Picture 1: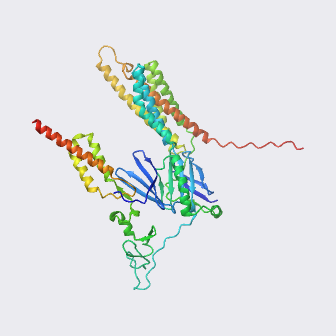
Picture 2: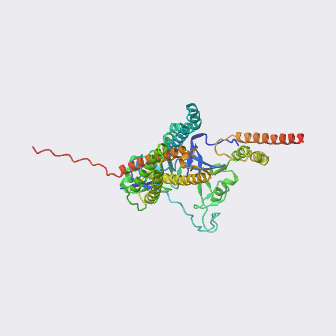
Picture 3: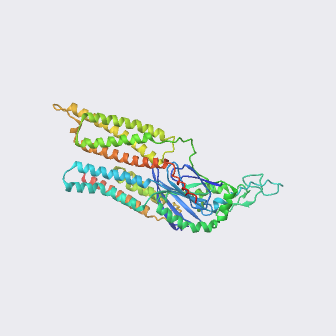
Length: 339
Length: 192
């Protein structure tokens, strides 16, 4: 198996993550081309990108690393909250906190050390290949700097006169193999449903915080109504974002928040059934939800998740609203009195 | 004004930007991310048109193996068939026919055309290790691992440097598993 390969240098390796799977990718340097390998279970599929054929490279920063950090941050916060509620002994809290959080903390540190993630595409005349191995911005910059002289050697240097000639001729250039979404008819949106949705989630989260201190039956009914209103507004917001140019990061957090509150609602129903069963089986004094031993953990978890999601959502909404403002034009200089 | 059309690298939305000296930075209106575009001379070149086969003028001329009515212009470097301009695939300085490109993976000769490798060593290692969690599958999986190791020891043709350590580990684990099963059976029989 150990045959002499023409690929002696591995430029990068990384993972290509989709919503259902993660595939390991490798980028190897050949004598006159790049070899991109994409592993799927036990098979590895290859694409060759010859230096003379590469027309362009596109790179954009993605939010994947931020998403990982947020998810892991919420996980760490949740673990710590559970540990703090479950025991009052500080040595036990420290032991459980460290043992539960050490792995997510290390993953966050590793993720931060590797830097922001990116999507990098190599375009030839017939294909557009996403290079999963170049999934970090810093690594992509290093590899592209390394490849620049090889591309120049294969294709010659780009003459500014050539660019000017294209500009003058008015010839439009298209990167072949673009999987561009067709420009649909998008409506402008000020994302008002999103604003109300995130405000309601924030209210719900704060209300659950209050539950930790004061328990009130009436407030629980209010919470239920808030939850239902938030779900309705979430559905309207998702419907609105499907036909408008709302930023993708805002769309993602809205969808995530909607899914989370649906799950939380389902969980609350399960808890409700549990409480009903307990109250029916308990003779004598009536069993209330606040008597449940994990009630504090349950409420704290919902509060943490709701507040985190709403704050991220409101922050992204603010950024989107700022981007909608027209650019400020410089004021015309006042002409002085004619002398 | 000449424009360049590209897809946002983050969300795939279609973007356009005026042609200027690279690198260009284009902001996506959908995801608000900035896509940096660096292009090379290959983008500015006009795409060469493919050649169609030239028709035979006299019957005694050599014709293409795939198109009887077309004049042969080149010989396939791999199988020796006569090819017309349409069937000639130039690859790595060699002229090959579409049939050879198609069968390249099967006969194992032109490694530059290989598109896929099946890593049986990974399979053998997985089959050796994962069933440890479900131990009652080991009597079935351990012989399978040994079969995979022996059958595919020399069959994998990796394009990139790769050693055989996975096969070695898988073989050792499977042998150990079989040994333990044998020991367990022997102990059980001895106790009875």
